[in-house]
Image (cartoon, rainbow, N blue to C red; front, side, top):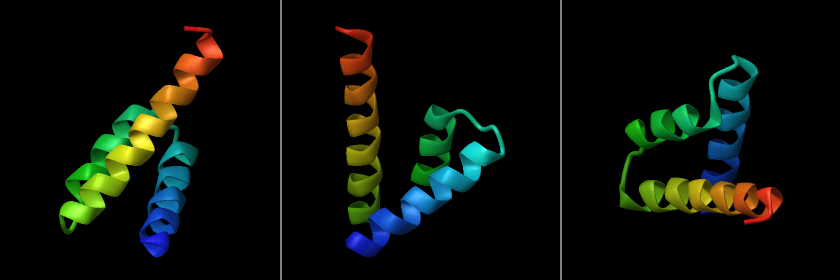
Length: 59
């Protein structure tokens, strides 16, 4: 699973460097998931990102 997280993080970085919004990048990653575990990892990453945004906004 650590490899999956690293691969997804690298892919998110690559997509963001192309100026693709992070929410869209997560959607794109979801569409390329090979199995349920990939989907879970991607969604945990997305949820963690959204939690960080909430914390930063003071909500």
